[in-house]
Image 1 (cartoon, rainbow, N blue to C red):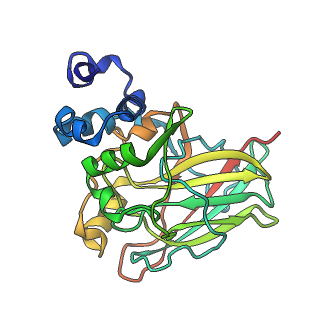
Image 2: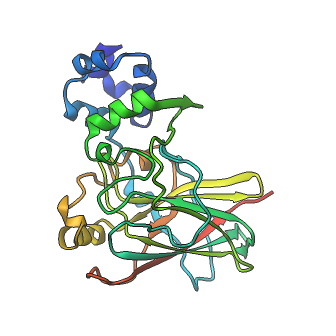
Length: 283
């Protein structure tokens, strides 16, 4: 098993979209002490776990407020750091960063009629790449993140989930859509962390049924303008992972309606804004 993962001639046999699941699943029963001797280079971890093969032409812009059309919004994985959010509009708490207003309209695809009373839940990292509910230092180090996931994570239906270990709840929230299918959140523009491109998670529920899990993305050049000129983002600079190499994007056959167009120029105190019509199929 160790030779298979580390042998460069054999590792391509495994689809890149399955490597992360295989790695976490295989290592779950090993002690942390053994891991240090078995996986000894962060570059190897990045190659095995954070190397995708996404066709960037598949990432399409989300319809926005005022558009008279909709798309069936593509699914994405929930991710390992999900847990239920409080119901609220302003999810910033004490987080610093550029103010960011997010508006989502849930509509039925293909007729684009609004869905009132749907739960829209979002969560994302802060300006320095940290998620609430977990030790803040782990997300900037791929090795520490891996070890933390192995120690605290659980595999369920082939996906990793990690229960929260702190009481922080910043940058997490849910709301119910109004009569026109809209919800609005006040947050900060997300930063980046090891292994992923910048993104915002979203979950849509109708009653007890989960209708959609997805993630929304941003233009690379726009993000890097923020990350190189605005505090506290500029502490870490440009994000190092390309859309092509993002493993979550690479795990899915489509990425329709997942690219958000942000309005507003990055500047201290400048409020940024983005909207998206989220198309779902209901019974």
